[in-house]
Image (cartoon, rainbow, N blue to C red):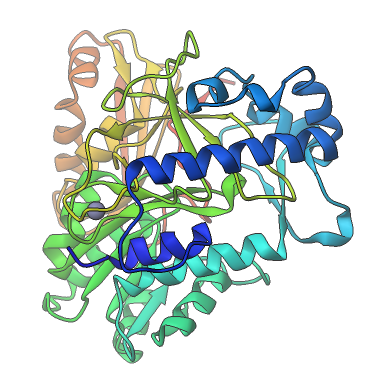
Length: 436
Ligand SMILES: [Zn+2]
């Protein structure tokens, strides 16, 4: 089998000579083990936090990935409270600092430091990923922020430039009709953006009755990618929809759907993924869902070592039919603490995403629980949208039961303008608001 673009990229990033043959799974694992040992040593020697956290760890005794998995975890609290202490280089070598405030959480924001080489590696990875989606001379609309150098939108544009494609940096979507007009005026063939915003654009597309032969590919990134949105985009744009998973802490790009097979190939050189039992911390075999724990073997500035992401996911067992040795992450990734007990069961944003984005004409929604009421604010079109949202919500077993017993009321508000239900790019949550 001919070596795929992914494997060419992989070999390059591994620093190997490109012989046209991808590394075997074993060779990739061996390479990862060497790099993991190196980053542990580097962190012990250069970061005040890791000097203490990994005190007594004898790197020469780490002779297998199982040995590596015995190292202690770090959590988002470490990144939140003392990010400088995780640094292994001086501030002069930091090219960009990203401050993260996720919606639904309170307290200190996280700060993540990137070196120029980290940003370059991400551009390189994006370039490979985008070359699967958009050809030379084609145009991609980037629905990501581009206001700052080194920001994700700018990195994507740089990556697209290198592949010979044309990038139109729209920025974070504020109005789907405006993005829609830009798709036509710029003759866009590829869309890149968060699922909620792409879904809104798909809605605008359908509302205006545009044909399904203009857009050639869609990449859903940044937040979770509900299957309902994947289906909407496939149906309305008539093209393949790719999903991406990544975190700022690991330098953005982390995994992207395989062009040939199913599942998202991990960026194995830069993100070493373990799936652990959230209660015991034990590493789980491929195929089982657990908490995703990540390590960045090549990030010299602010390495993260065995970082508990708080996200649940699984590795798809076996090798992909494309032949790559890179493991595949199941696109179904969800927050560990997703969900609110509503008396008759647990309601999760995951369930709501799948059910509500499946409602024809619903472009976007936000949801919160206050007192005994589940509030849904939606935008979209269609005369009976409100009734259909009501019906869809009641099809979620926990909601259906809670409505039947009177434990919860539904309050649905629909607006006609195609503007995001939650402004900006904050990760979506099912909010619980206290009664005044
Ligand atoms: Zn594959």
